[in-house]
Amino acid sequence: MNKEVDDKVAIMNRLKRVEGQVKGIQKMVEEGKCCNDILIQIAAARAALNKVGGIILEDYMKDCIKISLIEETDEKVLDELVDTIIKYTK
Image 1 (spheres, helix red, strand yellow):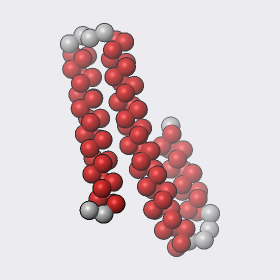
Image 2 (tube, one colour):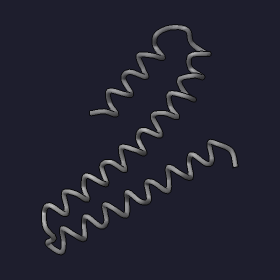
Image 3 (cartoon, one colour):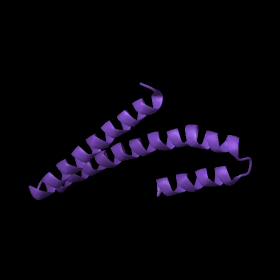
Image 4 (cartoon, one colour):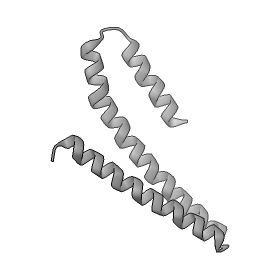
C-alpha cells in the first residue's frame, strides 16, 4: 500500500474508535452512570478526535499546501492555511 492509503486506513480506524467511545458515552448516560465517569470519557473522545484532526491537518499542510505553493506564488495559500487552522482550533 502507499502512504495515502495507509494514512486513510489509520484515520478511519481512529474514527471508528471515536464512534465506539461516543456510543459508550451514550450508554453511560442512558444507564445513569456517574457524571464524573461520563466527563472523563467525553474528554477521552475529544482527545481522540483532536488527534484525528491533527493528523489530517498535518497531511493538509504537507501535501495540499505544498502543491498549492508550487502552483501559486501569492499569499493566498498561506491565508487559506491560517484560516483552516483558526477554524480547526475553535
